[in-house]
Image (tube, rainbow, N blue to C red; front, side, top):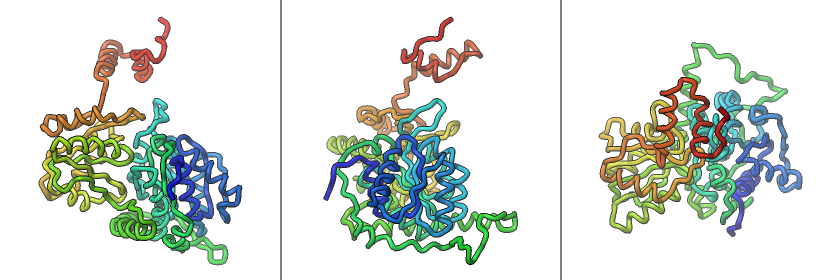
Length: 418
């Protein structure tokens, strides 16, 4: 039965149904409500057999999960933004050790300057860390993806990030059909770890590996990610058979069958994009959407197949690589390796929580469908503001802090005294 619930609480309920045995918890917005809710469930006894560990930092939260997972305990944590960066060394250790930890990343911009609002720069910064990354479009999918994540992680002995847009999803209250304990028990088998630290049979893990074997270690990590390309859609089908809901998989096409133009995106922006596409379909335009759920591993073949008939594609992404441009776009173009790549455009949107407006998407698509759009476009960029700062920097090498200058130009903060 659907319930009206905040996204963070829905995720906490789904995680609790998976019966984690250890939770390493350190609060950072916008994921705090997830670990707060799990704390209450543990304290009340609604989540039995779970050790909830309050730690002093995000690095410690991941370290707790590494230790717990290495001893055969189902382990979970959550983080965001600077917190994810603070635990990076341990993030790499978790994947390098092949430990099936599940972590929610409540996507949030990375500073400086400080910004607590949503974009995908935090998870994208860890795209090469060896973790699987699954992106949720809705709170319903976020809840369902967490259950699937434990199954995938434990089948492959690899850690999984479930990425959900901070505030846009984590703090939104909407109808979600929560997976029941009975459904989860039917879907998620008891955790059978591939490796266990045992005092009666002591071994070392994470030991030094030199040049003679390190390439092979990294190759095997890549091979497990490749295995996930087959497992992820299989798990999604099995989950749908038990719950009656479609969630997960590698990609999610929408109105693509006869599309000439495709818009590609990850996360909650897909909802607004689909609304815009519906409106343009009513005008007779042949346009569709490709939502990417699995960013790691990246489903090259599935993307190429989904885009096989399009004349052009536009990638709307909420992060970018300074100095080169789109991150997701480069992956999509790689899917066409050995084939002709259609004309394509990268649109950077929603950085630092800036709203992605329907009117802005309509205007952008007008240009794209006429093949007039610049290869790299920043949606709703305030050119006057940027030009003023560039002029300031040309005029005075000691032009001051860039972010604060922009805020003064906007009138958001007072000018410094002369």
